[in-house]
Amino acid sequence: MKFATTLLPLAVISTAFVIPDEELTNQIVLESKKEPQTLLDRISGNIDSVWSGVEETFKDTVAFSENAIDNAINAASELTEKAKTTFECHTSMMKFDAQAWLDSSLGEVDIFDHPHHKPPHHGPPHHKPPHHRHGHHSPNKTVYELIASSKYTTKLAELINEYPDLVKTLNGTAANYTVFAPTDKAFEKLPKGHKKPSKELIKKVLAYHVSPDFYPAGRILVTHTIPTALGEDALGGNPQRLRVGVDLLHGLSVNFYSRVVAVNIFGTNGVIHGVDSLLLPPPPALKIVELVPGEFSTLELALVKTGLAGAIADAPHSGGTLFAPSNWAFKKLGPRINGFLFSKYGEKYLKALLKYHVVANQTLYSDAFYKEKSLVEQEGIPKGYFHVDLPTLLDDKSLSIDVARYGGLISIKINGFSSVAVQDGIAKDGVIHVVSSVLIPPKTPGAAQEAEEDMDVEELKERLMPFVQEL
Image 1 (tube, helix red, strand yellow):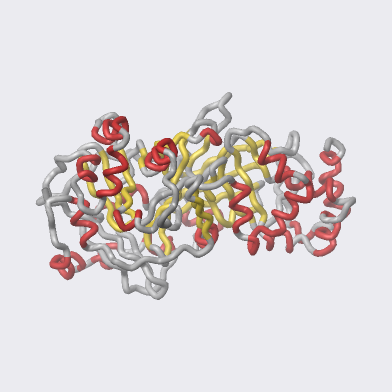
Image 2 (image 1 turned 90 degrees about the vertical axis):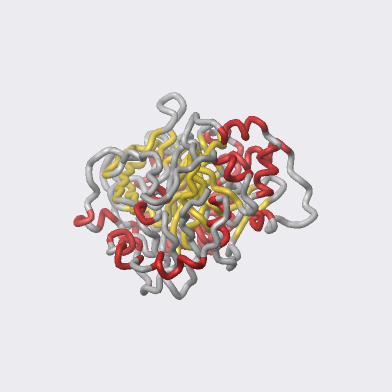
């Protein structure tokens, strides 16, 4: 059976990788030779002109076989890029590319600062079953059958075959599944001679490659996080999520280190996207903070000095949200305030300040929200504007959060003043959002936060004094 597929080669630094809209994702595409553009330019630009003539030019480069995955991988680029600053543990089967996550914010547009890009006030879109363009056959294989019959996913198929219940799931029609299928070359990246993980751990990793929701390429491009079939105890049993995005180095990637090499391979019960690296669940949030001292050394020192690092790690919790101030955020406070906070006398104030950045048992991603179990388990964040007050570890003090969504653009504002600089650091036990300003409780409840550059030590002490007394 021959399928038209879309190939996403690696976008190199010198060129901008432009992703087509959903209507064009069944054509062969190569990296654009256009000048670098912002993400907003890519979404709102004239896609038709970018892709004019591409299919005709490259139609002879694809050697079609009898399997849709084979068609896609045959035309994929052989180039690979190594991760920058990566935590990777094959004993616990965890991985996180911290530097790539931090770099993902480059070129983002703040919707709150661009009122002419005001998000529409309507509910989430309906995602219809795959539409197959005229001249192409409808799929006649399940996502499992496509994987099992491809010469490029033999190792993945071998692993899946060890779990009859997973085979049954991927052959079933209980949902329209999305599978991020690692190629055989992806498995070759694993270290040689490493002890094979337990069967239970391997099953969890496989579940992390599957979403019970339908995510064709068009939907992925307006999405930041995708729920998987891996239920995470540290998230209260809620689905662990994948982080998807587009950047100049990898093009379309998953978790920043796994490049998508083929998209929209439709089966009768879902869609497959080929990836060039195995997807491993992320480490805990505090581990991620340790990975990039160039960004978080001050925060890490503060957490250790106040004892909060150990307290947070040891305390039972079901997910959480950490608004992590960068080194630059602390520097903006000035030498006097920093000198005070990191003094012996100021330590109790520092502890109160850090507590105001931590939300326990509620995990707010840019496009999904896991509430406390006593409330609602999870919900999506609709397009348009979304508001929520998140209670912090600082008693009786909440953060006022506003989320604005416009297509694939998402902005998060805190207390009406501070913006999230880097979103969605997916962690085992929650999510990290980087803030470029230290968050300080406002003078009056519900008031907007003021610029911390205008604050002196005495005012900081006055703001935090009521909470220091309770420590």
